[in-house]
Image (cartoon, rainbow, N blue to C red; front, top):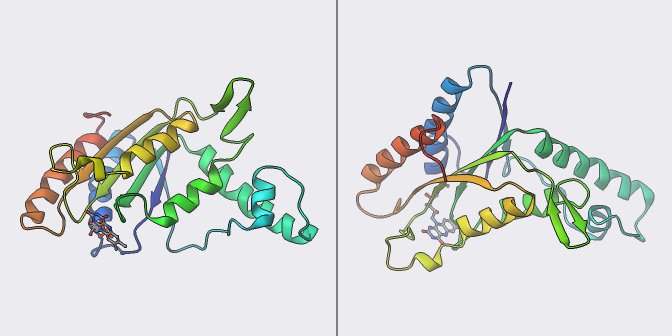
Length: 209
Ligand SMILES: Cc1cc2nc3c(=O)[nH]c(=O)nc-3n(C[C@H](O)[C@H](O)[C@H](O)COP(=O)(O)O)c2cc1C
């Protein structure tokens, strides 16, 4: 049985969110290929991620802290839960719009928590080593404008390169992405339909990175 952790980084809800729309096409297809698969959803704007304050950073890097033991224990419990959930998944679906040329802050906040020494990477003699080899990641991305490979300014797109680096750092090198460009431009509906077809194909395993 395969567990897919869906990590949603738009505050827009179903029916109003372009990115969730795209995720639905992917998930319908993925579930036909994995009939006994389990989809867990982490809606980043619906939950309050623990802050990266001094006690949390001390817990994250296993460093001494002047914080009260109860506060450290609280942070540790919250962090352990999040990271354990991340590690226990076999596959990931990132559901993310572009925000100011990159990841929404909630998704960056999430990565700042789950990229944790001893859990998702180790610091070896030759530098950091990712511990999550063998897992598969997918992303569905939407943008108001067009920063795709054939657009005038593909270099403004810091979203997919950043996502690929963050996952690769943890050893997750298998990332496939479907992006819907120009959701705030004329012709958005046609581009969404095309992207939905691509998301279905990705869910069926017909297209890869
Ligand atoms: C705070 C914010 C920043 C945004 N920044 C960008 C951007 O840099 N480039 C872009 O093409 N679209 C940008 N957009 C537009 C969204 O990426 C686009 O509307 C997306 O389809 C929204 O997805 P959703 O409906 O799932 O929330 C931004 C939207 C918001 C709310």
